[in-house]
Image (tube, rainbow, N blue to C red; front, top):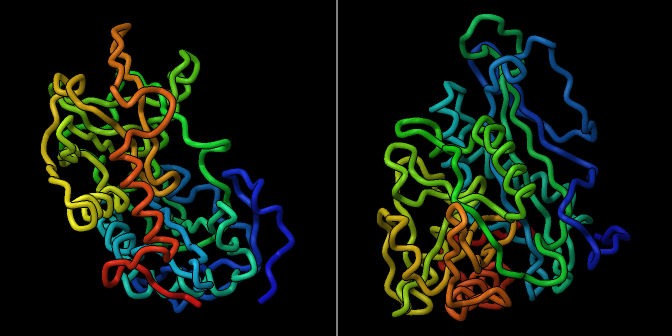
Length: 341
């Protein structure tokens, strides 16, 4: 299929409508088969559950053109499993995991012309999501739901190269113990918007959230997990029941252990330890790893030895290896790449 005439090298990280998206409705206790449609609009009642009580969850993933010309997506089974967990926590009907993966594949296939070519620096972002669609005025779960998947070509998250971020220790809490921090719910992101805009107004790139119970342990940012490197090259990532289980983070830990031979620890990380780390990064689907150069704790600066000019050496190896796997330059572990074309 001929590619669309898009300036791939200069794409930003934003929404561009494509030709097809997948839609399935849940009514009378069952999911319909679903279909691809060219209609990008969503029509729901003014009293829809998603509008009244924020009953919605979503996923984020990408499709890539590999070095040998295949179109693949990365570990969609884990996105399907995470959406199932989100649905159960929000009293929403589960869209079966195998059907989730099939809907993703069908949507990418239908928009093959929008998958950026290998080497362009761009990818196809995939957004599966679900929401309560029928009228709900009392505080209760909706009775009807819609599951949708759309795709959009996006450029690299950071234009002009990856530069280490300056982040602050945030006075707001991201998620409470026994709350919803471990699921990918829209409500978690809505509550983070004021905090991130406030950080930007203060001159910071992101927030470091601490645990809400004691404010002594590192949790995550508004949209990414933390990854730390010790001075003896151990990879450490925070462990908490209120952290979103990032697929990128889990993949990076496997890369560190199995590809780079590095020791890995997933454990509670006290904020008092942060000054002793050699490198720090934020990991997620959009950027894979965003390096952190400086953390500011109410005026006190913690400057990572890796500096403010480039990724630290271990972080760079992790980034290069995972992106190499995603782009087909490095052999992937079994099951990591779902070949679409």
